[in-house]
Length: 157
Image (tube, rainbow, N blue to C red; front, top):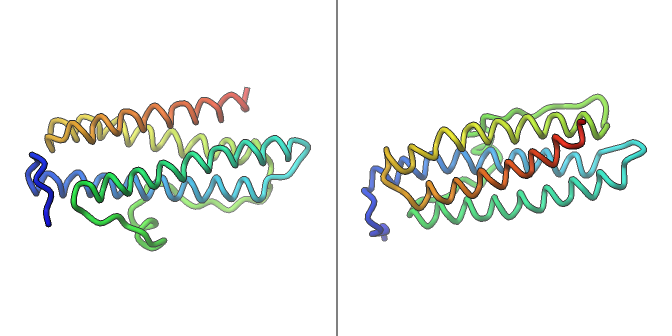
């Protein structure tokens, strides 16, 4: 049954498609953060292991929330690695060194890419697709990523 929430079906499809791309980025970032948690080495291992754990847990909550937003709009959320890799703008990286600064730089870059995508979509959700709810939701998500990026950036100073 299609949701009757005051948004045209074609607009719901546009929002859902954009949200699926965001979900893919979130999942890839989650996976890369989990990899950093598992594989970080160095004198700061313990602290960074805990730091990355905090970040991937926050990303896990975001993933669930984004997927549920897609379902709220009456669409199905992608849920396979193949789908995520086809939708994401992020890349998988292989590392030669497992140092914290390398992981932090890479994850920061990914957060910043997601922030740019979110900023570009906030107005589209509201103006193009007439979905103020998702626009507001994305604004909150943007603020979460800004804080996570700040935490990463602070390690690089």
